Length: 335
Image 1 (tube, helix red, strand yellow):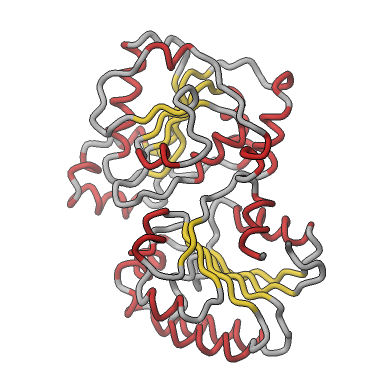
Image 2 (cartoon, rainbow, N blue to C red; image 1 turned 90 degrees about the vertical axis):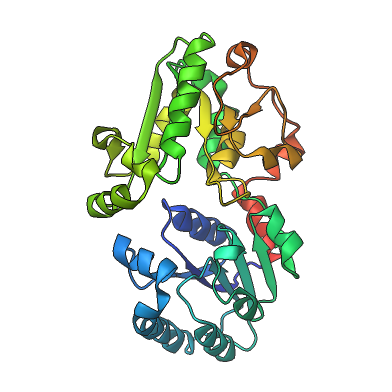
C-alpha cells in the first residue's frame, strides 16, 4: 500500500517518458513527488561514458548529486526511490542516506545488475532492492524479482477491443538498434512471409546518434551490415507507438543477448492483449505465458508455425492480468 501524503524523492533515468508515468501514478495515489534524472545529462556521449568510462565523468556526476543532496536536506522525505542510479556513486548514496535518516530507501533495476558497477556496496544503502531480471535474484542476495509493468493506455487498449482500428499491420517491431537485433528481425519477417503472412510489416529501428553509429560500424560486424536508410534518428512519441500497437496483430521482441529479464515491450504486449514473438526463452517461466499468445524463437530462426500467425489472442484471468499493471508494480515496491 502506498502511503497517502508521502513525500517521495524519485531518481530515475529519462526513458521514453516512463519516469513521468511513474511520477503521475504516485501522485494519483496521493504522494508528493520530486523527480530528478539519475544522470547529469542524457546526451549519447555522457551516457556512454557513465557506462564504459565512469571515471571520466565522476566529478560531473558528484557535483550533480551534491546539488540534489543539498536541496533534499531541507525536506524530510518518507521515501527515496531510485531506478537504475548508474551515475550516483556509493559515497553520494551514503551522503543521501545520511541526509534522510528517517526515509525508506527503495531500489529498482530495469537493467541487469551485472552492469551495476559497485553494485553490492550501493545496494547496501537500500532497505529493499528489486530487479526485473529473475537471475539477479538467484545470484545476488537480498534482491527481489519484480518484472516490469504496463501503463494504463495499454490496459485501455485491451479493455476496448471494439474501438480498435482494423488490424492492418501483420507484424510490428519498434526498438533501438543493438547487438544482432536488426538481422534477427529480418530473419523472422522473412520466415513469417514464407509461413503465409500477407499483411504489411512495420519496423522502426532507432539509434540515438549518427556519429556513434558510424563508430559502431567500424568495429562491430553486426552494425556494419545495417543499411543507413533503415535506421531512424528520432524515437516515436507515445501516441505514434499506441497507434501502431492498436493496428498490429503480432509484436516482435528481440531481447539483448546479455540479458534475461523481460523487456518493457513484453509487458506492454500483455497489457494491450497482443500476440508476441520473442527471442527471450525465459518468458516461459512466467505465469502469464501461453503458447497461443507468445511464440519463443531462437535468434537464428528461419521457420515459423503458420498456425501461430492465424490464431487469435487468448485472454488471461483478470487477477493475473492486473498483477503486471503499473499500480501493482508500485504497490509491491512501496509495500
